[in-house]
Amino acid sequence: MTKYIFLTGGVVSSVGKGVTAAALGRLMKERGFRVSMQKLDPYINVDPGTMSPYQHGEVYVLDDGAETDLDLGHYERFIDTSLSRVCNVTTGQIYSEVIARERRGDFLGGTIQVIPHITNEIKHRIGLVPKATNAEIVLVEVGGTVGDIESLPFLEALRQMRSELGRENTAFIHVTWLPHIGATGELKTKPTQHSVAELRSRGISPDVIVARSDEPVTEDLRTKIALFCDVDPRGVIAVVTTPVLYEVPLLLEREGLGDYMTARLGLESRQAPDWTAWEQLVERSRQARPKVKIALVGKYVELQDAYMSVREAVRHASLAVGVDAEILWLHSAELEKGKGWEELRSAHGVIVPGGFGSRGIEGKIAAARYARTEKVPYLGLCLGMQLMCVEFARTFLQSEDANSTEFDRTTPHPVIDLLPEQRGIGNMGGTMRLGLYPCQLTPGTRAGSAYAQPMVEERHRHRFEFNNNYRDVLGEKGLVFSGMSPDGRLVEIAEIADHPFMVGSQFHPEFLSRPNRCHPLFRAFMEAVAKRAGVPTTSAPPSASTSRS
Image 1 (cartoon, rainbow, N blue to C red):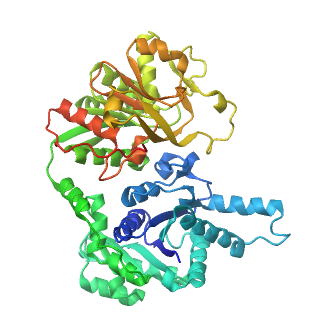
Image 2 (image 1 turned 120 degrees about the horizontal axis):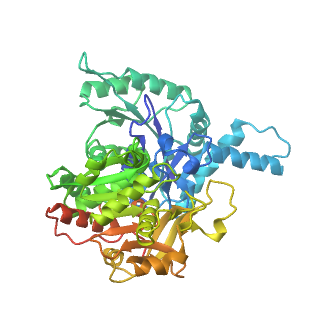
Image 3 (image 1 turned 60 degrees about the vertical axis):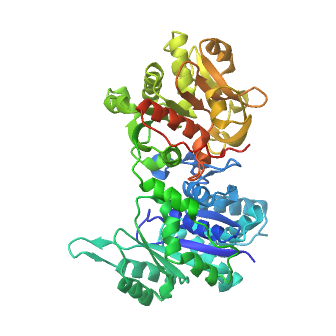
């Protein structure tokens, strides 16, 4: 029987529920269990693919092309397991399916209701996870906080699952926040008590309360929470904020959550947890390292979660190389106004990440031109690769009109253009080139040397491609196509020949970077950054590639 751990949140949003879920998944994996994870998102959008990054943060893409919540990035980075599209469920998906079935007549004229039809579909979607992933333990996170009207059907479905599967196969964890009152110097448990009371009013009593806090939690407070919330004292887990994200599994382990959950679900660990690699990772994070500056030139820098995987990939690579990377968050639209250039010029490397729409495009192109002419290491991700090629074309074709047809449909030099099969597509959601695609590497190039293997697979999320009509003319000028689709039709990686490191990938390498196994392109970029900064790097050999070989 599959075991299910359900995680809910209370008091405030962004309390760290996703990281807690991911860290707990790692705890169970360290004990020898096959683990998978699922996010239940209450919003009515079918998926986050068409949502503004300002509202939702980044869209995280899986191997199978699913556009999912950014928490699935946390899941994969912590449990180091590739998830599938069944691992992210939204209210929009649930209602779309139930309404489609009603239109087909599947319900034989019956009245369609939240209970049982919507809740049954939710339970069905949860049940797909162990079938698709062969998981023995499935951790299911409910988005939002208890009390949100949107999450009520999900909570009811989970309540029903406990009744149907039995307490021995299900467990509930409630993640809350303990606010600190500065005037009195106290941590207050009352919001947690009210949050648990709200959850219990829905028929769910938590087995564990993870109490998040910026201050140490005393034993008296733990006892108080256990008493007022009717939880075993061993089930009150205090997690004090840490500056090192990847320390969270270690904190939960020290609090005894792994052993407690194993016993709660009637399981016996198959192996003793080995935290050596994670402890070394955290130790490296705390050590003083030579500082370097990375300018991230984006369009959504006001909300750094829009580039969460990029930020984490930089962190992974900086730890592997032995430097401390400070990210300078520069708005590309501000560069167009002449602002932010002093910071850009102070950086030892430039990253231009993905994005959509014409706003701030010229600022990104200007950043690419600066990196090319000043020999500053540059890493372009998706749109960042396309604009690197546009800038190169403007210079060597001597035409500032060169562009992508995404931004100028009448450009005389459409260096970036739609594929024929993408023309005429009306719907925005789920219609791009999405998911894992193969890439054949050219030996002797920057990219080929970084990967050190002939073929890899990487995750994509884009609609426009490099226009092959410009491959020869720009290739003669020094634009190297170091990664191609196996049939030679699509440019996957481009780089500048006469440059220390100026590489752009049509795919998103950040989605395959892992804490103890950084992505090869990010590592090679960071090594070039350290060289420009004139700082020493570690002599550790490159980690095994995170891309699919």
